Amino acid sequence: MRAALTGITDPAILEPFARSKFIPVTNAAYAPLVEVGRSTGLLD
Image 1 (cartoon, rainbow, N blue to C red):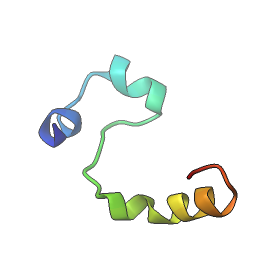
Image 2: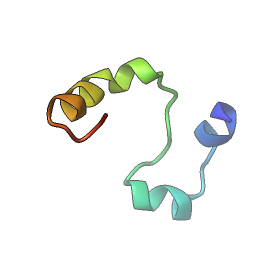
Image 3: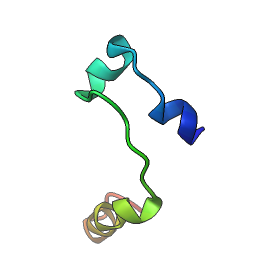
Protein backbone atom coordinates (compact mmCIF):
# COMPACT_ATOMS: atom_id res chain seq x y z
CA MET A 1 0.00 0.00 0.00
CA ARG A 2 2.78 2.42 0.94
CA ALA A 3 4.59 1.82 -2.34
CA ALA A 4 1.37 2.36 -4.28
CA LEU A 5 0.65 5.69 -2.58
CA THR A 6 4.19 7.04 -2.67
CA GLY A 7 4.47 5.95 -6.30
CA ILE A 8 1.58 8.13 -7.49
CA THR A 9 2.81 10.63 -10.05
CA ASP A 10 -0.43 11.54 -11.83
CA PRO A 11 -0.99 15.30 -11.40
CA ALA A 12 -4.76 14.82 -11.61
CA ILE A 13 -4.65 12.68 -8.46
CA LEU A 14 -2.12 14.82 -6.59
CA GLU A 15 -3.69 18.21 -7.40
CA PRO A 16 -6.61 17.99 -4.91
CA PHE A 17 -4.04 17.38 -2.17
CA ALA A 18 -1.88 20.34 -3.30
CA ARG A 19 1.10 18.00 -3.49
CA SER A 20 3.63 17.03 -6.12
CA LYS A 21 4.13 13.65 -4.42
CA PHE A 22 3.27 11.67 -1.31
CA ILE A 23 5.97 10.79 1.20
CA PRO A 24 6.05 7.88 3.65
CA VAL A 25 5.12 8.71 7.25
CA THR A 26 4.32 6.78 10.40
CA ASN A 27 1.40 7.18 12.79
CA ALA A 28 3.78 8.93 15.19
CA ALA A 29 3.82 11.92 12.84
CA TYR A 30 0.14 12.47 13.61
CA ALA A 31 0.43 12.13 17.40
CA PRO A 32 0.26 15.91 18.03
CA LEU A 33 -2.94 16.16 15.98
CA VAL A 34 -4.50 13.25 17.82
CA GLU A 35 -3.59 14.83 21.15
CA VAL A 36 -5.26 18.13 20.20
CA GLY A 37 -8.30 16.30 18.85
CA ARG A 38 -8.73 14.37 22.06
CA SER A 39 -8.17 17.37 24.31
CA THR A 40 -10.79 19.38 22.40
CA GLY A 41 -13.30 16.54 22.30
CA LEU A 42 -13.13 16.13 18.52
CA LEU A 43 -11.71 12.60 18.88
CA ASP A 44 -12.61 9.86 21.32
